[in-house]
Length: 360
Picture 1 (cartoon, one colour):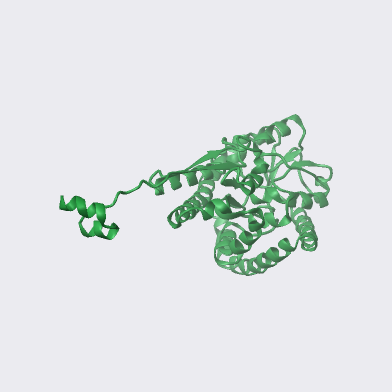
Picture 2: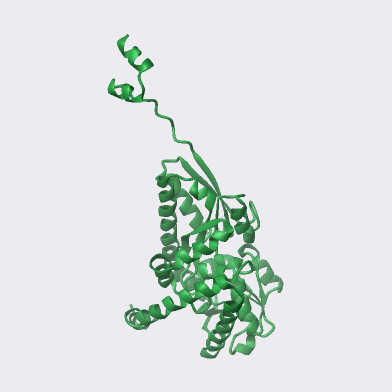
């Protein structure tokens, strides 16, 4: 009787003093949706979103679930930024340079021709001004970004004919990953095409395209490009270390508790590292298979690379003039890249060059 009286008339402090625990309310479950720009068939780049989603669920004890939707399932592959900005979905997993047409500065969140390799991109984003500058820019689209994958240096694509000089690009219909490289290739005389990953093979097979670039040996073998375009060039000078981004609606992210924000950030970091490791593990075996299938793996000539570099610098200067956001972010990137090149040409560069010719 005395205990019931205390509980009835005392406040919470009285309840605790009497030794009775207050009722514990179950944490409200969170359900988010993520729109990918990639097809499910690519377990590497699309799979990055699944690694992220599973990590969020595991770290939250199942209280925070994110469903992953392939490109075209909820919205077009190149419509995911609009989806996040408008709050149709809470997240997107995509390559930022796909949205170059909205503003050239988008490309700086992923890769630019003759830019960072994967480690340099991480350094700029994490310990330079990269993430800060990009998220300031993304604020205009009501979203923030987190790293959620990197492919490492990519290959330079599949071609129906050999590329012996810059003149061989003239009139070539080539699928490219973003508008920035498209503008560069236009200066070389090519006719760039922007086609989602899931539609590339059909276009190449039908002759709608003369050449395609995607990522590297593992993905390219799965997509079957070598069956219709035998010449496989390297390096993909337009994507030395492209970051795959996780875009999050700002309002949705702000609504999370501090714990759940930390979970999202940690899960994105896990997926980020996993994707690069996966590509590095799978590409060597796939390259050997492509060689066995008679793919002709060739290096772009110095003349092609020199012409491509010159064209890239011209496009960058044009972007400086038309996009204040590009000019501000690219200036910081360029300064950081200079120091990175200085360092990488010392220990890293000489080590890699030596090991490349050793027999193990």
